[in-house]
Amino acid sequence: MGEEPLVRWDWIGRNWPTIQELLLDHMIMALVPVVLGLLIALPLGLAGARWRVLYQPTVSLMNVVYSLPSLAVFIVLIPITGLAERATVIVPLTFYSLAVLIPAVVDGLAAVPGHVRQSAVAMGFGPTRRLLQVELPIAVPVVLAGLRVATVSSISLVSVGALIGRGGLGYLFIDGWQRQFPTPIVVGIALVVVLAVFADGLLVLAQRLLTPWARARRTT
Image (cartoon, rainbow, N blue to C red; front, side, top):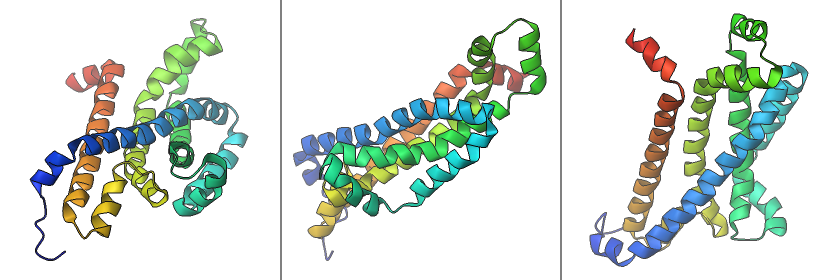
């Protein structure tokens, strides 16, 4: 890129409103799939934990979807959801999140000690109450670990959507490359990294708030 400086701060100032719009677009397309993936993974994970015969086929199917190249998935989806539409990016990212979150939910529920379940049954807890008040709280650390992986991956993968005209901050990569101008590329990379670190930090904080017993155990 010749003698062009790595960062032109005046360009960032002039284009800051556009950068903010791309950042918001990036956040929506990255976080909506994770939320949808969690909402779908919870019942599927519960079913997989209760009826193990369902678990392997479900995970295998999600792994097959996860292995599909993003560009090929976009080509299939474009006639349905449209070119340069958020849905074209959100749909495959939701499936990618499911590939991480379903095993996390199943593993989290499997981590609940048997004697804890038996104690809950002995105390008269029904299946729903036992799930909500005993099993899911204990599964939180494992589920949130999967959620952290899915969130950071989704924030990174959204940039691929720039290939179909809807990649949030990924647009800055295409713009900088086409003009041989490094500033948009540097800004895009920096914002993706900051967004990923910020989202991961929020999930770590959520885990600390949702599992106060873990902090008490570490301090004793």
